[in-house]
Length: 77
Image (cartoon, rainbow, N blue to C red):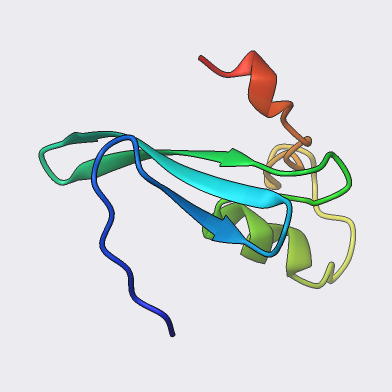
């Protein structure tokens, strides 16, 4: 694992076309921005793990959480 220290308004590049920017730091929370091509899927880890979980059957709709939809990062403020 590569560990880097960044300050507010600094960025990290992943490959040639993915930029991770530190937008704000408030207490123990860090707001990051991720700029990547549309064909690159970007998920929070807990959502990614839920998507990857094998489906064991067809549970009742009331018991199963909705499958997360892809989010357009430009629509999030």
